Amino acid sequence: MTIKALVVDDDSALCEMIKAGLDRRGFSVSFVTSAEDALRAIELSDFDVVLSDIRMPGVSGTELCERIAANRPDVPVVVMTAFGSMDTAIGAIRSGAYDFINKPLDMEELAFSLRRAGHHRELREEVKRLRRAAGDSVAIGGMIGDSQAMGAVTDMIERVADSGATVLISGETGTGKEVAARAIHNRSRRQDGPFVAVNCAAFPEPLLEAVLFGHVRGAFTDAREDRVGLFLEADHGTLLLDEVAELPLALQPKLLRALQERSVRPIGAAREVAFDVRIIAVTNRDLETAVDERRFREDLFYRLNVVQITLPPLRSRGGDALLLAQHFLDQFASKTGKPIRGIAPAAAQHILAYEWPGNVRELQNCIERAVALARFDQIGVDDLPDKIRSYKSAHLIVAGNDPSELPPMEEVERRYILRVLKSAGGNRSLTAKILKLDRKTLYRKLQRYGIDDDRS
Image 1 (cartoon, rainbow, N blue to C red):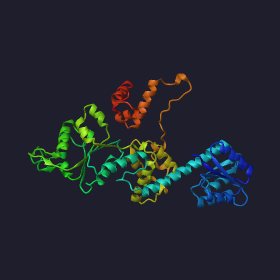
Image 2: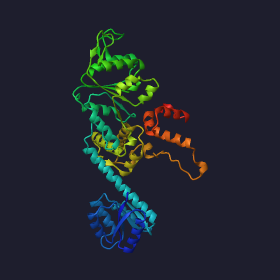
Image 3: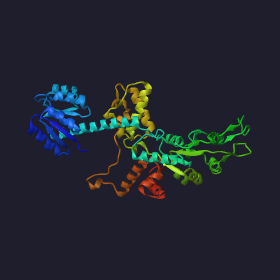
Image 4: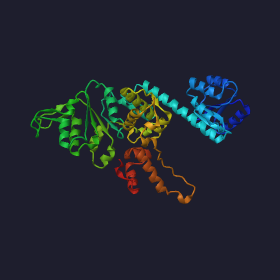
């Protein structure tokens, strides 16, 4: 970002010197010699930051701060004060100045202060834009986000919704897989039919079979009456098989037959019953790896994987974290009746920097907590959990000037594979695609480098 700065000082020679110094450091600088000229310049052109002297004839720097704060609060003002004039600096801050810097000027210190002010403005504008977007967006079934990654997901949802094809939705925990499934249902011809969800990991095998297919009275102990299974309960609607990777192996062929024949036989019944249901399967596991390890039937995998939608982790969605944060803020502020209108730029910076291992669900929990703790009309840094306030990126950098300290090629490869595996949420199939390796080659490298296969 090239920062566009306006310098205001009645000493034109000083203005020339500041302009020359800042131009060499990548700034775009204009200058005027009075506060009146500065106010006219701000009306005619958009500046990222204003640098103003305090003591000037006519309208002083303090008055200039007050008028810019009143009319252009989006433009930060940095004031120059004589060395040791702390009372003057405090007065300027109270008048709306963003920062102050002492004379005589240190050009590096000045450039740092102006960059920080420009970045502050950029963040504040981004927060405002995202707040408007959160209020104006007509999200597909609650799938909020304007990143390229989410654009691909929502496009796929639009294209597949009316097709009736079986869909496999994969992604890390907390990425919104059930939200995507409901979006598909709500935009399909079956939207007036039932949406029925079952967690395949929540029931032991005999009970899950009865839950899915139903049973007749007397089919087993405690079967005191007929029960309609979820396949029939979801007739003319959508059945969501959540955590489908946890489906017991012994039950998988029965599910496969039901999907092929489009009929089920309740436990203990003499006849099969037809159903008309769209199947959406959801998993946070790598099903292709489960197939390779014989924990999931290959034929069932291909029956479920007609159309696959992979939800990206929040860390790979760029500014969507702020868009979602504002969306959740509006929800929780309205629910609690607290007059919180936005996110302070410093807090927004922490939200953007954090990797969100728990994805959208963790962000939602964080904003609910922040709204509960907030004392002002914006969420500040102190309202965020400590792990987010203190988070520092752990991105790997391999560098050094001493040849003896540089790692061997195998170590570089091991670290890079580990980094990609982490970014892919432990999904080895996705990792192999990113690395342009076949999965068997990747598995051999994981074993050779001692990388835990349980990551997926």
